[in-house]
Length: 480
Image (cartoon, rainbow, N blue to C red; front, side, top):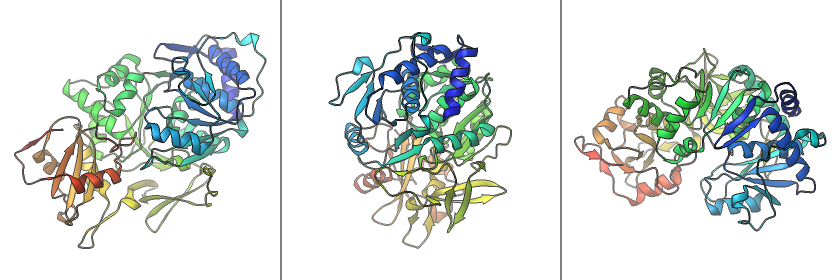
């Protein structure tokens, strides 16, 4: 990670007044950023080894991340979208000794706090920092299916390997402008929204109102942010891409022609959605990865977008399909789970897939596989992709009822008819066709993870406890 700081100090010296990060009322030039990171690093002298970042995002988060990395500490993002019991678990499990907080939220924790406000300190008045970045670690907690998510330990060597592999894929330059939509607590946004831009001297802009759309808020702020900022790159979850496509289509609008690369991941994207995005000018490129492998394993490249695949495998990774499961070996595989054993030399992802013509195709989760009473194996993602391509649908989950029938839980942001659902499933063989549907909303407690993927445990309880409507009711409109 030392190369990130070498790039930062270089930009601060050569382009001190050029804006590096901005948005939500804050703005940092390269000189400002270098000074803020240096100042916070000095304040961290004597701080505990493990520090939590209790900031929702934005410029202050960038400073916190970089200062903790520079001082060789173990940082733990506390996602703003986690439930209080999940936050409590993370703090205890990671052994967090202090929190970096915003001044307006200071005093809300029993832990020692380090309030961070951006004061635009004069870098010339500060001693030159000594880098311990090679010793830094970050603990990424995924949402999990309960209040006890696991912490994935990512060291500087994994991050550096990931950056080296992604640079030729994303091909960023100093002329790029990245619009950061996904939360910075997520590893992929840290990589693409902080580190890649710093390496090449590109600008990143934040808009927290646009980020809120990921959690069911109105889509208007996201559409407006893209139109206003005119970025060249961004990251989106498939559900968010679908809502943006619908918003543009309903207004005969188009995405800004400044866009050259929009990475889509975190859940499966249907080819229909990606083609619809292409039709309104969104250069959506599906990729695949997981936190345990430093966020990205394969990605479609600009100019080489093969819809229906997640693209070519990153340079330096050895991906093999073993018993239909995607396995990964290489320098981006995590140090291990926190408080757990070191990972095996080859990481078994739990995802089913295959490699065709040098490109990876993901078929679904191994542990989500449905086995029907007739002995048929069904990857629910295969069916769900068809429904999720409809921009009115935020997400969906296929499950098995106690009576042996397949039931589809549909999370809808707008009314959708059962006739539309039936039409979307045309071509799915009878053994995989759901017999009934249960409609719910994005506000359903615990049903959706941050990436928009369904919590299948919650979906199973919904299928067990709620009445379903037969899909033969093609004339009836089903409200969200």
